Length: 291
Image (cartoon, rainbow, N blue to C red; front, side, top):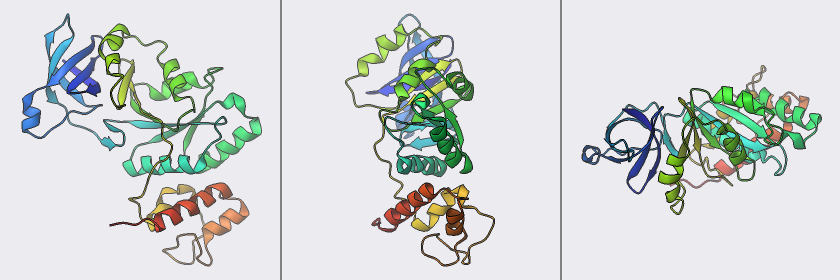
């Protein structure tokens, strides 16, 4: 049987098999011998020990398309970066860090701005203008009115999506709404997986439909991008690619003369707040000690 590892606790792996449910599995010794370790998101082949008990062994790991280290998960198709429009206010610096991190990992990103019912049309338009201009796909949602939830389900369909963002923005509420019509029986989850609640929080994949999964991750209060060199940072700001060229080819758009990006900020072609975030991140990377 082929399935997907949706959680791992203390040497046990919980494998979701479409239309059959969740099997509690151990990994065969061959993986240890070959220095391989199954991780959440891996597609695998299992040998069923007991259909009644829903137990088995993982006998083969299928090739990984990609692998994220933070959170540790494989075979991710896209990332949903969730922020609230208000309560809490958008931390644009943190949002830019998330976008940079996902670009570094090569993962396509959709920004979900939740709690849209708390902001005016003018505030919504400002948020959209900043990040659509930067080339991002964005979606406004409200778990209160369920605005955008059906569109979000379409974006997720037949993909494995990692969900990330700071605490308090409504990630759990969104995930709960997405699970409202989950076809699999919840008993197998509570009986097998919930007993791991006392353990350290790990990544967990939640099946939404037969071929649709979301990766639930803890909230982040900060996000480090310290492995980037400061002169590389501009490559992660596609909205800085303005028509006029800077005077110097290696311009970092900070203090250099005749900078086309700074001119675009002054004329309103590039959002001033986003540029100021860039300067803050540039200075942070410049002052990072690397050994």
